[in-house]
Length: 220
Image: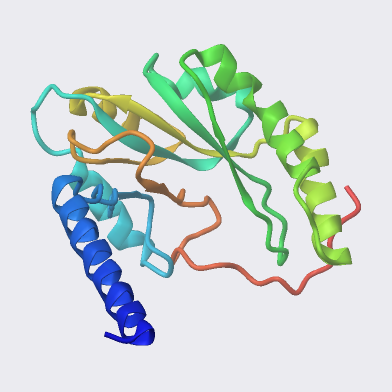
């Protein structure tokens, strides 16, 4: 057999061997399944507020005693030092801040917190620091970031939601408090940290839709 023919035969043999090894490895070590979660706390974008409130109430039905992750949304924003008034001593995992400015789009700032109400109260400082370190790309976004950080530093009434864990009876009790607009619970088997959160903002009356962004950005 001529040398070129032998070379081609060798290449084909190696390719076949590699393919066999790949198949065997795939069988022996199957790929890890991706973690896919459709769990979500808060209204869908554009969802009617009335429909979301109905869904939230429905999520609290039942009598199982398991722990449920839940989103508590406020009627009006509150200052961070008032979080313990509404949490009922339950485990808080996230505090959600939003600085509302008429006709100016401002971000929701979500701060994860370890166990303890004191840490939750102090999270407003982390929210301000997060805004101060957020990259901006034009004059308007720079001014918005500066405004939001300054108001958070000033302890504004900008807590619009908290994510916490409790059983259904405890969560229903939280939902009955003055100043609480809604409490929505996930199923008890929902895993921590793999669900989306989007609070119902106090200014969202008809639908959970973004507001206008055509107004001037205040200096402070």
